Image (cartoon, rainbow, N blue to C red):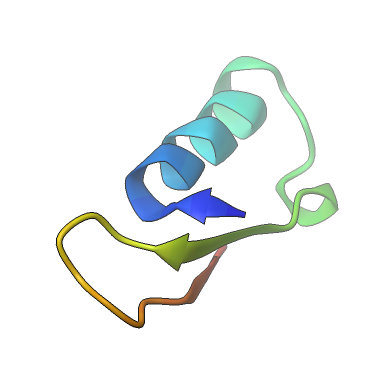
Length: 43
């Protein structure tokens, strides 16, 4: 879990650059810079 943009970038690197199965990675964004009460599951 982490900041939305950071987690999306990390997930993209793991899947696209490192070749990990996207279904094997569970990432969630619990905050987003400049907003409050943010939560999303990154698929």
